[in-house]
Length: 236
Image 1 (cartoon, rainbow, N blue to C red):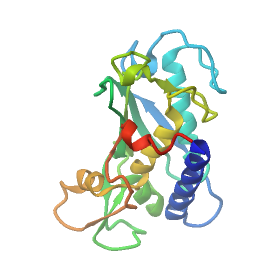
Image 2 (image 1 turned 120 degrees about the vertical axis):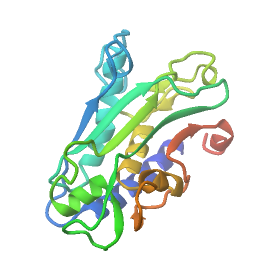
Image 3 (image 1 turned 90 degrees about the vertical axis):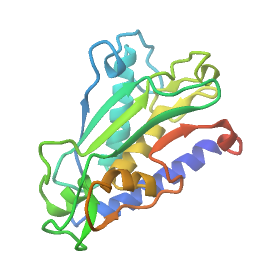
């Protein structure tokens, strides 16, 4: 039941955002992942890794990057934009206790308004959506989405009691491990324009006037968090 519900919500999310970005013609987009981790850490971690769930990587860093790219390609397959969507991505140690953790976060790097093709005047649009509507890159010097995920979820007992990331493509994490592809897919959605009030405010609070456009999300938070109390009803 857990996997069925997750897939149903994901399909609805993807279909909704596709309708937001589509402007006619065939649906396709290119999402490029820009690995901004340093040597030997995050997406570049050389720790040996055993391929799992369709992910052929043999190092931990490559497994992470493969899974992140797989999630991005799920979005790319159902969006339309002739402007490449660039995602700055990294994995860093973040808050993780034996009972709770920040899994990761992502958001639009900036926003744009009153561009050629804007559907509504005086309205801020997450930059990937604005680029799609404008048909050109409105901020070519910067990425469209910035994303960070928690590298502390590595099976250590001090972090969620030993729960770790699952980097397979098949949505079938063993035990209580957390499906990395599902979390990344959710967070990329924020960067594309699905934003709670706090996430939207973080993106546009440096703007003087105008309202922000983006779909309101149910959780209202830019960070994906793990709390077993929230997940207790989703174990069937």
